[in-house]
Image 1 (cartoon, rainbow, N blue to C red):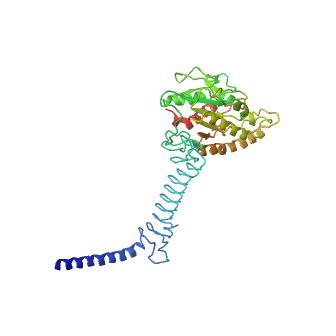
Image 2: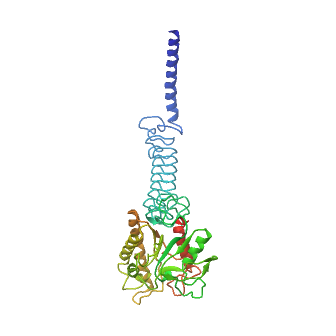
Length: 397
C-alpha cells in the first residue's frame, strides 16, 4: 500500500509538472518563432493570426500569414503561402503555387503555366520542367511534350527545355531494339527545297540535322515515306533519304494520302507534321485552314493510333506566293493559323491521343533561303532539325 501511495504521489507530481510546462510553453510559443497559436497568446489577437512562428492557425504567418512554416503563410513550409513548400503559394513545393515543384503553379507544377497540367507547354499541358504536364519530351496532351510547348528537362514528364532526355511517361512508340521509324510529312519544307541548291545537304532538309543529333546520341532512327532526297551519308553513316514532303501541297492534299495504304504504309512510330504554308500563302486556300488541319490530325491518329504525332506551327514568310496577298497579309494569315494549333492539339491529347505540339513560328535570324519561303541550309533547316529532335529525343532508344 505504501508503494501504491508513493506511485500515486509521483504520478500526480508529474501531471502537475506537465500542466505547468504546457501552460508556460504555450506562453513562450505564442511570442516566438515555432508557435502554434500566433503572437502573442491571446484569443482573437495576433495569436490566431500572429506575425511569425511555425504552423499557427489563421495568422499573418498562419492562415495567410507572412512568416515561415505556417498554414497559409507567405514564407517557407506554409499552406497557401508565397514561398517554398506551401499549399497554394507562389514558390517551390507548393500546391497551386507559381514556382518549382508545385501543384498548380507556373513552374514545375501540376496545372500551372510552365510545366503544369493545363499549362502552356509539354506533358499534360504545361510548359516548365519536372512536372506532370511539362513542356516537351515524353508527355501526353500538352502544347509541346505529350501536350507540351517545347521540350523537357531530364527526369521530367514534359520538362522545360526543347529537349527532354527522360520522362516518366509510359507511352513508348519506338521499338526496344532496331530503328524507330520516323515519317517526315508535309510540303516542300519537309522535302528540303529552297534556293541553296549548291549545299551538299540539299533536299535533305531538317532531316539531316535530326539524323546527325540522333547518331551523336547513339539513338537508332530511320526515315520512311514514298519520296527520297538528301545526301548519301551523314555523320559517317548511310543517310535514310525517305520522306513524305510534297512540293506545293496544301493540307487537303496531304489529307488525301493520309491512309495506311499510302503515307502510312510503313506504319511509322513517329510522325512529324509541318503543313500549312501553301494554305496561308494563297487567297484561295487560307480560310478554314485550321479546321482542315484538325481533320487531318484526326485522320492520322486513326490511321496510326500507336504512333506519336508531333504537329508544328509554321513561320511567316516574306515570299508570299499569292498575288492577292502582301507579305504583311500572309504573316497575318500565318498568325491566325498558328494561334489555333495548340488548342487543336491539346483537345486531342486530353482525349488520350498521342499528339504533341511544337512551336516553329519564329525562325532565328538569317534562317531563310534567298527565295524568302524555305529555310536555308546554314541556319534554318539545322534549327528545325534540332527543334524536332528536342521533342522526340526521349522517345528514342
